[in-house]
Length: 175
Image (tube, rainbow, N blue to C red; front, side, top):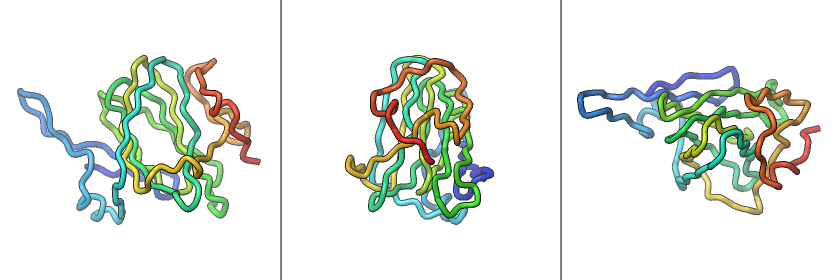
């Protein structure tokens, strides 16, 4: 596993190190020892999977509030997405900044998103399946969000006229 730091503190892109042969490949998607070598303490308590049927759908920008803040690893196991993490830590010098990454079944990249960040993605293909590894249990009362097109953030989503849930259409602005 190759851990690539981003411009935002604690946010990593993780590239697999696949072992390829005539049968296909084998790669790790998680190894506690590899995380520890990179100074990361990541204790998985929940793994979830999602399917998003239509290209152009945006899910997010979501986060979990206290006491259920979480670190998470996101991977796209089928299809292709434009994935975004936004720094929402009020005391951070990079508050409001974001990093995006294309995740796909081809590149097998994963996004490590720490506590204090919102996460969202837009599907770039039909039938996208995502895998989430989380360090905290989901709590519906602790769910929070930021409006996907908040003018403060200036996120440049790749596809216009996204498909959105009612919940994602109605999150508040940061300011």
